[in-house]
Image (cartoon, rainbow, N blue to C red; front, side, top):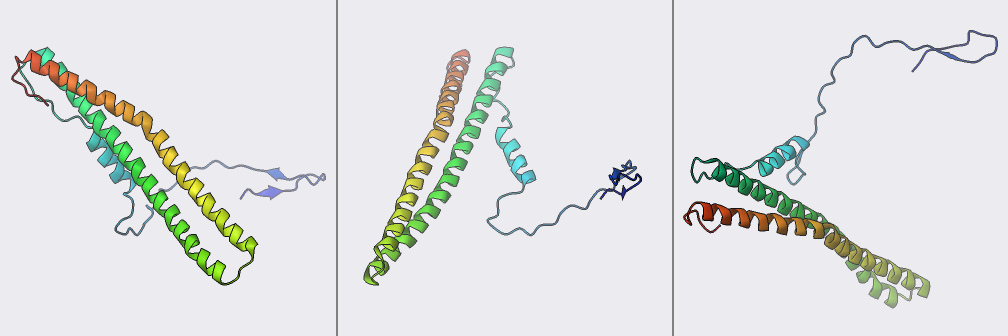
Length: 182
């Protein structure tokens, strides 16, 4: 809060600012975690770094060309793993959302016979049917959104895997056919 003073007879406030000379670091915030909680940001970043860290490439021989192709293969492999992880994470989120929608639809559908047999007003039955239809629309929207969301990732994954295979084939050719058929 800023100190206010009314120094003039016009009754307009004057605000005075002061410079902060020092500050103290706040203690880290403590948090209770439960099994099934999403990982903390630090552990997520560590896991992410491990996934994208290139594995040491197999060395065919000590020449520069073999080293270059080995590094390319390792990079394509790491990129493929990262893209696959992104696809799986997005599918997991969508599945969770779809389960939630399906649960709500089941709840509303179980109310339908009760409304019919209890002699509910047609307006109430119509509202229930509209809610079910809205949830069905949301379900289709989530499914379509997931497909659109991961389409580009799947294309990128396909390209990375194709490049990985091509690099492995070049490595096999350079090594005289003895590298392997990975």
